[in-house]
Length: 317
Image (cartoon, rainbow, N blue to C red):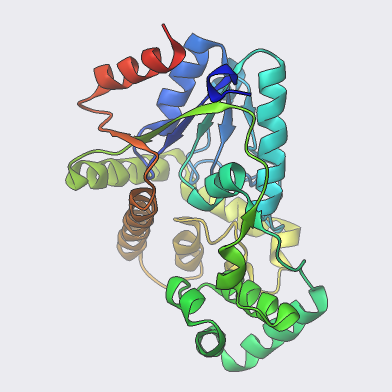
């Protein structure tokens, strides 16, 4: 089928706090669309204020997908996301509506649109061995082990990222092949849509930093710390052997709040660390986006008219 005959879909990408969610909601209401979240924090229940999850009122205005699909003590892989998001997109198209993909998790978007390498499945036994080794030697030591067998992967993974270190070592030990080699061979059928891929990013980095700071202060005012207290009080979280290593708690802001509630810093330092971590996330997101050549960039504050023109041209209106 010619690409021009495929049903339309829209992707709104960009760094955190760039205004993706608000625009997605506006366009979905105007176009008869449904929103598919591309955010690795929004998949978790109980992560609401700190993850900037849509409010109940916003969720009621437009159908949203891939929000609150896992509990915070569970994991959710990019492959699982890709399968679930594909099913959501196909169902939206079948209803005659427009899928609007919105979020900033690049790996999720890549998994959905380009596929993932057909790597070995997870081995609970091997993961237990790796975790036990980390408990004795520390994750930086295991990161050094990874650098010996897969320097390319180690260069991209921080020594403080246990989940990715564990998976990279697991894949190598199961297959004898570095995970970086597997990742060069993605597989997966293309989505049955023609997609307008847009990036929302303020041209002035200072504007984005200001938005991040103001949004975090607003989250504090909305009760973010109480949300994290409630998260810590969940029975399943209390028995988690290493809660700070859970993907949900590693979401930006949550780790810093957890450490503050553990008494590791004062309130001012907590705020400073959380804002800094959010800015670092935005920088990583922008770096990933700049590495792609099929995206159209817009400053949401100064180029709203151009955004609307791009949308109208894509839809033939």
